[in-house]
Image (cartoon, helix red, strand yellow):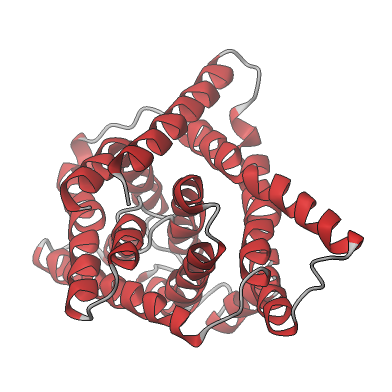
Length: 315
């Protein structure tokens, strides 16, 4: 992967985020509309990207290899976060939030947006990215992540169960697009037909909107945060999420002898800031929602500088 492509993608993302912040302060768009942009990401643009890339390439079992490597990297980082949190004697709800936001990143939103600008014309690589994000991150979050949040949350005897969370996941447009994409890949769409051409045009336009929608979601989410009360947590989570996780993912890729381009996308995906879904799961099961959201925003801001630097040093 060329560093220039990654850096250019981040510059574009930063400009779009800045535009969203400006429009928010100018009252062109309201802070409360963040939820609308977030739903358009998860219910429209992201499912379109997932289906488009899976359906256009033959589905290969080896695509799960990257998902497994990323999952192992996340597991290592979560374990380190748990050990560090125990050493810091964090309260249980705080510890649960720290574990989740330290390991789970924005692979299915910001990661896709960045790498789509670099590899968007390579459907085989994009197909591997989709499998890596959905199987290596999202599915474990709705299983292991829910279990962690439920165990450390204050209301771990209340609220939805893991089964409820899984039902929500399998009914989501993201999972539906994943299943339909795999089926379409196995069956093979008649590429010469008028209907398929129109579908591909629609999916292409919808997928292209992902970068814009993600950037505006981030821009509406950003706001001043006082770090004095949790400076130690800020340093810990940013070090684990933005430094340790890409190093571990890259190390696993090197040991397994993966091709350079697979190592590159693993490192970039692992270096993504904390995922919004991690903060949502933490809040839903009674972990410290304030800490989770503040750390989420902090990693987003720092990643605007950290990811290009990681790309320059490691790729």
